[in-house]
Length: 134
Image 1 (cartoon, rainbow, N blue to C red):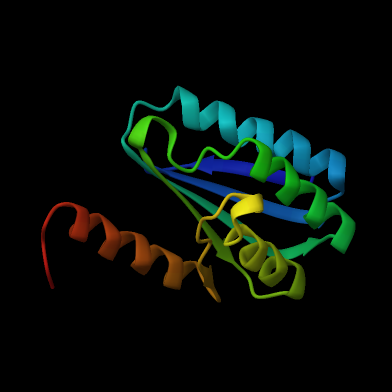
Image 2 (spheres, helix red, strand yellow; image 1 turned 120 degrees about the vertical axis):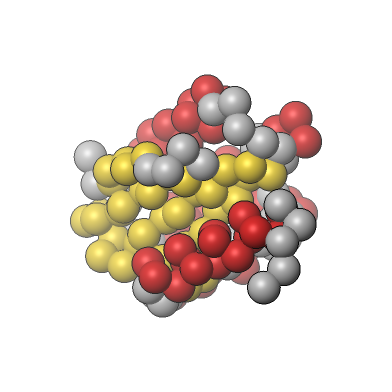
């Protein structure tokens, strides 16, 4: 399987994608992501996708984003489900840009260069949700 899941802390799922992510792997990942999201009782979740060492192609990205568009779950039951990329390769940029379009889900997937950057984003987002300003 070209991805692994690390789940710590409770509201953050780190999906480390390595090797070739073809259409079948994306379908498995999407189903796994949906499952852990639905199983979590938390109102806010962060799915961090580390794609720095993954490879894929245009067809796999387009197919996956079509699936997302048919059944988006970034706001299940009014919850805040955040998808965040670590990595700046062209396929990640394509997925992030497609996600903004209504037919592909209509949501933001911010991109970060490093894990430290995404961790800082999550830390600040948590504070904002608690009403704390820095």
